[in-house]
Structure formats: structure tokens, C-alpha cells
Amino acid sequence: DLKCEQAFELSDASAERSAAGCTIKLNKEPVIEYLQSNVVMLKWMISEGYGDPRTLERRIARMEDWLANPHLMEADNNAEYAEIIEINMDEIKEPILALPNDPDASALLSEVAGDKIDEVFIGSCMTNIGHFRAAGKLLADKKSATLPTRLWVSPPTKMDAAQLSEEGYYSTFGTAGARMEMPGCSLCMGNQARVEPGCTVVSTSTRNFPNRLGQGSNVYLASAELAAIASIEGKLPTVDEYMKYMSTVDATAGDTYRYLNFDELPEFVEASDKVEISDEMREAAKKLSIL
Image 1 (spheres, rainbow, N blue to C red):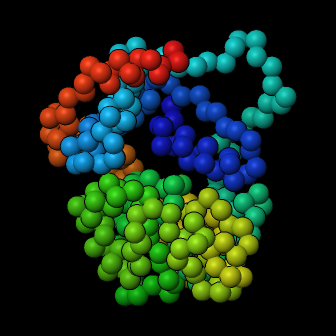
Image 2: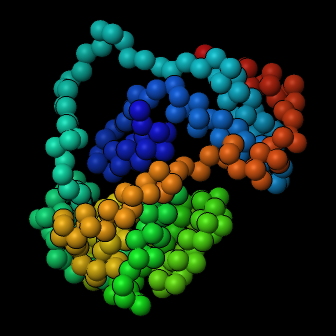
């Protein structure tokens, strides 16, 4: 029952854990939802003059062909696996962090609570719009006027940034004193902005290899929610402190964790309705199909 965005986060993380590949079995419904949204988004891109319209048209045509007859790859019933590892998520009672400076080394929050945090980064392809809403709600409720940490915020896409701005979250981040980065990779890239040398960081990025975010920096990897709380506290919170903060987010989870579905945004739908896919590109799309 995972959404496509959630599957992307898991597959992103697997690459940093030395996995040669990652496949996640999804139901048809979230894939249909995701592609319907993307068809509208790509048509909007054509209307705005993004990229090569012929390439975008072919992509749209292939998506619409699949949506007309949705089918997914399935493992063979008699498939054999080197090992099957079952994880009961109900047994995970608290957040798990990757320890400095190795994404393969991890610890429970209770094992590292109290560690002083200097800087916090919320961004990268490991985040989606819901994470920024959650961080914004946590920051809006902070008690002190200023943060004890340096907070960096970088939504993964321009569309996320525009929607967050429209919903008032950019104002919340600005009031909290966050440094707003251009949408994209930012600190995660390792060759753009940098944290202070030797500081301790909580980051939502995919990687915490030595010196990547900053020279001699010690980087924990954690969720956006835990990162936001650490930025407020200036330390890794206790499990009880974390749960208390999260109770406010959990109360509005349905609204907070809404995904950015472009087929539900009037501005994008109106623009996409004016875009027609040519017969030539539809024929080209069929030739590219492997199914």
C-alpha cells in the first residue's frame, strides 16, 4: 500500500546502503495516481516552454497508453531468493538514525539522545512536500524566538517550493531563521553550500560520508521531523520529547502528508487541458513501448 513517493525514498536509501539494486512491489492504484499526476505536470511543462516538447509528448503518450491498460511486472510464483528477511514494523517503537559518518551504521534515538547539534539540513530527494509541512508545523510551535542551531531548508523541486510558499510555510521557515536554499540538492551534493568545519549535523540527505557536508563534520541521518525537532532543541531529543512534539503533527497527519498531485491543482489542470499530443508522437511512443 505504499505510495510511489514512499517507494522512491526507500529505493534512494538502498543505494546508499551499498545495494546493487532495489525493486519494490506496489499495487496498481498508487502507480495510477502518480502517473495521472505526472501527465498533468508534463503537459503544464509543455505549456510553460520547458525542454523539448516532442520528448515530453512521447513520455505523456506512453504514460497514457499504460493508464489505458495498467499492468505491473510480477515476480514468478516459483522465484527463488538467496535470503528472505522479514521485518515487523510494529516492533520499531522509536526513530532510528544513521550514525556519523557511515549510512550503514545506525542507532536508536534513545542511544544517542542528548548529543549537541550545531546545524540541521532538511532537503534532498529523500524528502517530499509532506516532510516540509511537518517541519513547518513543528517550527511554528517553537517556544524560543531564535533557533539554537543553523537550519538549512531546500525543497527538492521548484513545484514543491511554490506550493509550500503558497501555503505559508516559507514564511514560517523565514520567521524561524532558516536559510532557504534553491530547490534541488544543496548540501547533499557536497560541492555547493557547506556546513561549518567540525560541526555536528542532523541531515535528511541520503549520505553522510566523511567531509561530504563539511570538512570534519559529524553527520547524523534522520527524518525531517526529527531534524526539525533537533533544530529547535539544539540537541537530539529524548524519545519522550520526540513523541510530545510529534503529537501535534500526528493530529493533522491527513493534511500534513498530502502529496503534490498536479491533477488536483487548478492552475496545472487548466494549463494541461490546452495541450494536445500529436498523432506523430503517439505513434513514436508506441514504437518505444516494450510491452
